[in-house]
Length: 280
Image (cartoon, rainbow, N blue to C red; front, side, top):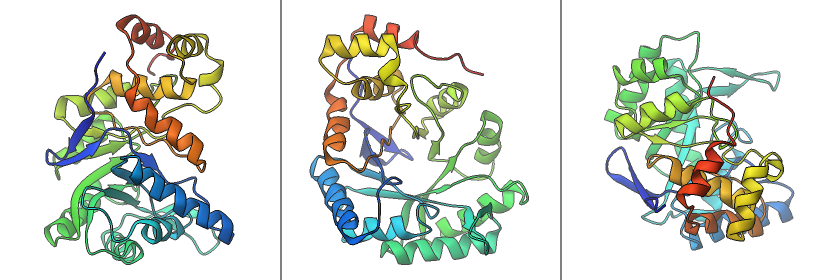
């Protein structure tokens, strides 16, 4: 099987289909931060063109880390971020996608990223206490002002995606998904039908892929790791998937990126399909 190597988010923003999730990168102490900076730069050297971060990842510290490592950003690099979840006074978190709050969150993200535009901004979670039209309307206004290029969603159902698309154009969806966890298969298929990028978070099922007999058997046949096989399956499973595996290890980063070169046979792909839990 020969999956495509790139995808155009929003129909025009081309990225390589194996991105990087920055959530797990430590920002302190100094030695760990330096290692995280080196890893981000290595990801770009390896050809990664999509890096995913978010405000709750260290409450801005992760976005600042990405900027420290990569600003000024290469022309072909897409750094996404997410808003809609805020830190409370007690140090906990809560949903907050009220229009005024979203505007503040976007402005703060721009400052941390050292840029005046987010090419892909995703609503981290739909705020249950704010009408969806108000949430997406605010993001649409920010897009009209040039602060946002494209709007995405995270952890949504098929119905929520459909409703959102009646309000604004949706360029991406980021839901939990991997070969062993396909609860959101219907959402993936809805994205595929509409040519919307689907960014699986937790794309590997840590610890579980290494124990699954089908995955380990295919890995042995390909002289690959179970992680690489799980990522190769995602790339083969749908042309709109853009997996964003994360790691704090350069060795694992290089292993993950190499998964883009793995080609599954039809038989191997079908056997991996049988490893999945059925959609719920």
